[in-house]
Structure formats: C-alpha cells, structure tokens
Length: 266
Ligand code: GRG
Image (tube, rainbow, N blue to C red; front, side, top):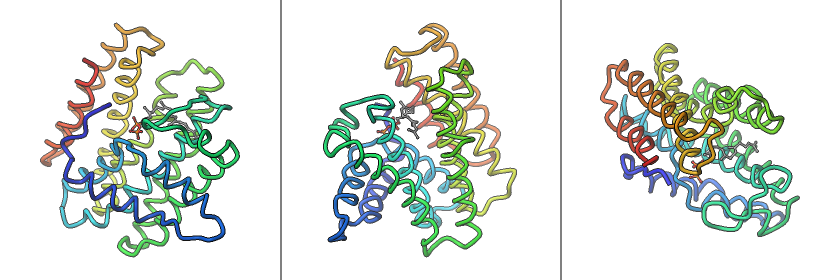
C-alpha cells in the first residue's frame, strides 16, 4: 500500500463526501445502492481524489469544497473499474481492498450492474452539483469521460486483454489516464488557463505511470523484469519531479506524495 500521509487532512473529507454521495434510500432497488456503498466505502487509499484536492490547494484553499464532488466522482469511476476488473470474465479476483469482491458477496450480474450504476452516478453527481459553474461541469465531465473511455481506461483494458505489446500505451491509458484526470479536475475547479491545466495533466500522467510501475515492482509482476522496472521507475520519478519543478507554485505536497509512491518500492 502506498502511503498517502501528505494529504491526511483531506482523507476524512473525502470519506465523508463519498458516504453522502450514495444514500441507501430506495425501497425498490436498495441492493443496488448497498452494493455501491459496499465497494465505494471499502478502505481504498483515495489517492486519485487526494491528488485533485492537493492540486486545487496549490491555487486556493477556498476551492477545496468545490473540488470535493469532482474528486469523489473520479473515485467512483475508479471503484466501478475495480468491480468490473475483479469479475471472473476479467481478472477473476476474490478479494479487493481486504474484503470479498462484490460478485462474491452478491453475484456476477449484480456486480456488473453496480459497476454500471457507479459509472453513471459519477456523471450524474457532476451534472447536478450546486457549487460548480455550468462551464466547470462540462469540463469536468469531458475530462472524466475521456480518461475513463476508449482513449483512456477502457481502451487500455482492451489492449491489455488482447495482449498488445505496447506496454507504455497500455499503462498510459489503463492506469495513468485517471491520474491525469485527477490533476486536470483540480485545474478546472481553479479556473486555470488551458496551458497550465495541460502541464498539470502531464504531471498526472507521469505520476500514474510511476504508480503502475511501482505497483508491478511490489507485486513482482513486471513484464520487463525487476532491473529494468527499477530503472524505469527512477526515470519516471525524475521526469515527474522535473515537471513539478516547472510549475511556479508550492508543489511540496505533490512532491511528497510522488516520493512516497516512489520509495514504496523498497
Ligand atoms: C474493467 C473498465 C475496466 C477497467 C479496468 C483499473 C483497471 C482497469 C483495472 C484494475 C487492475 C489494476 C491493477 C490496474 C492498475 C491500476 C491500479 C494499481 C489500480 C489499483 O488502484 P489503487 O492501488 O487501489 O489506488 P485502491 O483500492 O487503493 O483504490
């Protein structure tokens, strides 16, 4: 597990908001909401929403409340991807976040539907949010849809399942795209100019590639072997830090989080 201590102050706010975003309130489809809550409120690291809040904080703490729904929408999409990835037709896992996977608790059909619900719900809460401007809503929805769809996570998962050889592209899409989105969302709620949002997005992708590389090293699961993976991780770490250096803001918390991901390999 990667430590997320640099943003500990925000983790409680993220958990509270996630808890509020799916209320077990329907007499008709309670099991759908309960399934969503089971997976979403399981102990995840919340590193993607944390990145959104730390990015927002770079520009103004006053926008943190506004950033919470976009940050949680991203975590909801991530959770849907884990539910579907754990299904027998994908990775076939029995445990996730230290608990039985959703299809083990209910059944496969229900896990597919809970995943569908979470993916849709993420966009519903963005569209209905009361703090974002209409322009910010559209931009958040664009960013999240692009990161989750064919250009992003789902496209990467298809390439992976088809055994494509372009490993960097698979990791960029399957894992890093959501991290790029995490940074972009922070830029959108801060109403930054396009070029600055692009620079943040680039750092997010670098962070995501590093995160995936370290995950593979820790799991002893890197296709290139450990030596090459360690050298690759060092290069990615340097590139990510250099990208932060190019931003004229106090990026110390993002630096700490990047270092805590990198040193997790040891
Ligand atoms: C099935 C649509 C679909 C996509 C699957 C995200 C994904 C694509 C698969 C998950 C499998 C995996 C190991 C992906 C690499 C990214 C990764 C390390 C995900 C786990 O993220 P963490 O460590 O998990 O942030 P927590 O539980 O802390 O949120």
